[in-house]
Image (cartoon, rainbow, N blue to C red; front, top):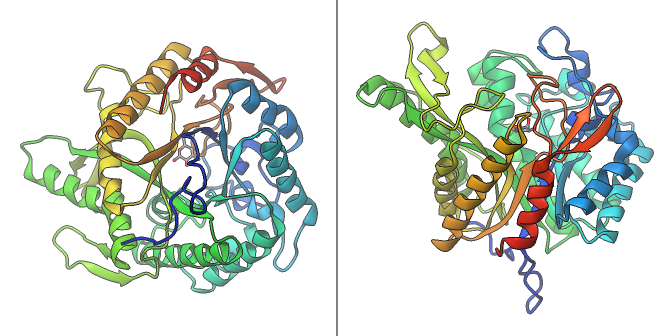
Length: 425
Ligand code: FCB
């Protein structure tokens, strides 16, 4: 079973239990871009050109928004490509910048949760040591080794945001760097990323024994398109195992089992058994799986508006019950759970409010059933660059006017503040 390490909030023996973490989440590249990141230089595959909110310059104003909201936690990421713009070259100014953010959060009694890797890479890294090369692990390791002693005041760490999404987009769809459509290389990449998680876990704990470390795993409710169709059912079962459960099993057993329909399963040892102190769940939607021989590997994915809540501006189904399901799956790990992302792209504040309310109701039901859920982070603080959709996907509690860069509170921001004050978790 994972970790003898202390649960988040339990701290050293006898310390007071940390209150429920009410937070918002962001990622560095989506807010601040980077001239050295792979996404900046991969025009040929990117559907939406990276445009940013100038957060790298406006961070003080944006951190003040956290105070206005009344959150007690903030999840954000470090942009590796700013910290290490070239191989062997470290930008101390970038490290100091992130330290200043941590200091401001600490001053304001806001718990920082730092993501080391949120989808983007330094360009030199992805060109020379893409994740399917074993050398990638060592380069990630050096970055973490550099960062750890340099940053003070962080207890919660996410090593990788959504390792499966990273690999599926980069190696299956080929729509993000390194833009390969090669499943065997993707499997190698996943193995290396999980190995890099294990290395990062060890470095973090060596420097900070009471650190709380996890990945943020994107989980989805997965269902067959037609319940009576055995092929849709088979596909949904295989997808559900791979997407939601195989990582959980790898943390429990130290090996990754990859099952393909009508093929022998692959069992790959990965050194992550027990290497997490809590588990970060990113949840957004339900996906219906349809077997379609004309699609790659026979897989077609659809969003249906079954419950009549309407789809989001991402075209995603709004399905709060799915959050209960995935939290139940994640409970198998027997570590505390934190919802590290949950949010909706819409310009309609009422829809955003209803989304938050219904998903937090789901969290409450899970807690009533005894699940150990320690936090909720709404995605996102402000509108930002959404990877494949650009600026059209408005996830922010604060709307950004991209002409003036002004941040404008939506009614959902006030609603979230109200929830934080009044929901007794
Ligand atoms: C998640 C990503 C995050 C953001 C949201 C909408 O999968 O982690 O960066 O794009 O989706």
